[in-house]
Length: 193
Image (cartoon, rainbow, N blue to C red; front, side, top):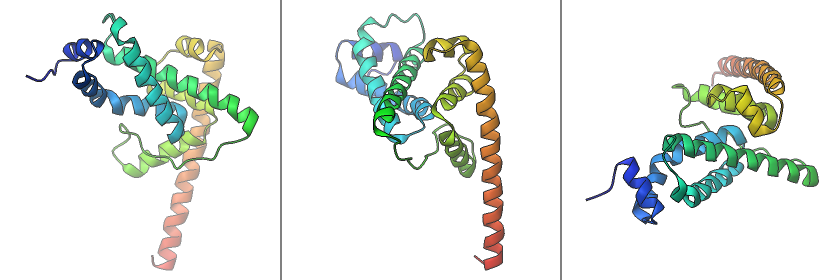
């Protein structure tokens, strides 16, 4: 009989049951990737952070007591892995120079309009890393400014001001996307495409 209840999967994975580990991974992998992708703003960094989150989660699983929901516990691990990945990239960036930008991909929980989802992801990718991390942690993931400050090593006031700036920048970027899209549509009409 296959093990399908979450608690049974957790207990089985903690004992080293590969089928239970695989089932947990398949159940939560899209959520883990979505959160790290939003924070990272870069597909390669997100893949690395998601992999790191799963490594950490499976290593820590025997100590999971169930005080919080498993999804909440895993989410916290994923956020921390993404933030650590960003800090590592910032250190490498200082030494090596800027990294190339990747083509954004829509998240699995994006708006129903795929074009709108791509525009949102592209706009998020254009934000500076610090602003993007604060915007995602607060507006998407629901963290308080105190929790964000603790995770990022900043003051709550800094989190609030960066969130304000990030929202303003997103509005400008999205307005620009709308203008670019309108220009593209009008040029298509003019050329008959």
